[in-house]
Length: 442
Image (cartoon, rainbow, N blue to C red):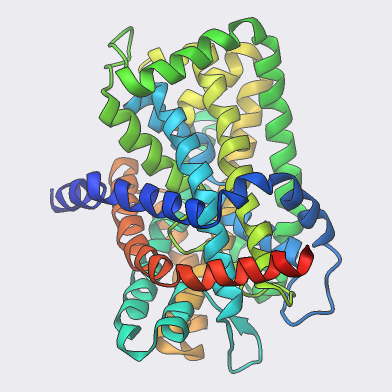
């Protein structure tokens, strides 16, 4: 299959090196500031709820919630489970590494997005990789900006639309016997009602729903870990050792090499937190802020919350339960892991969390897609894009999951490449702005 061949190339050693290498390079250049500033990042998130007198359309807090609405999706439940199924428990370790380095990547993306943002025909702020490539690197790099916007406008239909719709319809069909098409049609109507209001309604919706759904899922996961606390040291040991030695076949688990653990851990980690893809800075560019660095500090926490917190809860539940040996994958594996410790309750938490996570991702990614298409075709493309986005949802609910995941992974990589190149070339700007900000704070 052509898609499988392309996927094997774009997610080969060079792509993993590019993503992890960019994160490491930026982390070193920033003297590991993102990791050192995690506590300060949480403080800024809290303060960001009230910054509403600066230039921009949405509060810094709602900008983060909008980006989290797009990243906290099926990747946190089905994606983590798939990574462990294919790469063994060690995949979780590589997800952590990708996230810690990805914090610097996400920080740099948001800094550049705010620094180089523009206003559209309606006076709203727009930004993201296509704009910081065009405004930061100049005319001779416009082809790179075009490449990012082109791939992003298509990629959204995979990572942000069809995968989310299919995951919801699949879990509702297996749990309640609801036909996939019915779920897809209801989803399409609900998403359409939110999209009518544009970025302000999307941000308000995200600001209300994302914290609620994240906290419920997190508390349930923490309870599962606490109930299995005596097995936690052994589980952590298994995660660390299998990350460097691979995992032997056992039960319904086919076994996994070190390369599989790294490949699927990083790929699913990036799918979940999107650090390096260039999607989140599109939301952060609309934030009401007069400091690109301050918004960058808020943005980097999205990667921490998404992967180090939410994905870890899913991964630890799966490893602690031993259900990764069951031969199941995706959301089914996560549901089995939760329900083993918390019968009935655990399965329903996973089911309803998946539905909410996927729904908010459908809403958040629609904004990314329309802004990418806006860069390519202008304001006239927005309404047709929203119509197409809504119409694809029922189709996605009935599509083959394996093909969708493969296509989404491929498009993610093609979308990431222009952004990673831009981050490296514009890194001196990030370092200069950061140094200036903290010098004034001192």
